Image (cartoon, one colour):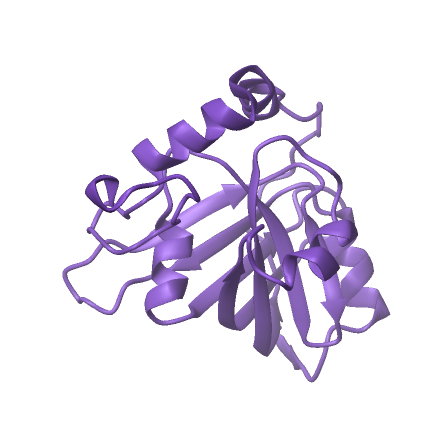
Length: 189
C-alpha cells in the first residue's frame, strides 16, 4: 500500500499543491514535554527543491514548532487528500527557522505570498518521503479559507504584532525558547 520516494517528483509536487491544508508535527527532547501537531492552511506551502520544502509561518498564539525546531530540528509534515483519490503523504526530516532578520529571508520570502502576520519561513530538509493509502480519511467539500487569522494580523498592524509576539511567542508551553522579537528586552524573555 505505502511507497517510499527518493525525492519530490512532479506528481507529488502536484498533489502537495492541490492540498488546502497540511499538518506539522514536532516534539521536544524531554520525554515529559508536549508533542505538537499543528494544522496549517492558506497559500503558505512551497516545494523548494526535490528534497526541500518550506512554509510561511504566520503569527499565532503559540510557538511550539519553532521552539522544537530550535531544540532538535525534528519535524514531520503530513498531507491528507480530503477530495479526490485517497492518499496520505508524509515528509520527514530536519527543519529550521528563518526569521525576517536572517539573511536567508531575502531569498526565501519572495517565494511566498505577502501575507500579513508572517513571522518566519520554516524550511524542511526532507530525509524520508512516504505515502500511505488514506482509505479511512473522509471526503470533505472545500468551502473557502477562514479569514480570521489574516484579519487579526491586519488589525494588529506591525507594532501590535510585535507586542503580541513578545507576549505569546517568546517561549513554548514547555518553556523552550521561541521567537526573539527585535524589540524584546532581556526582562521579557
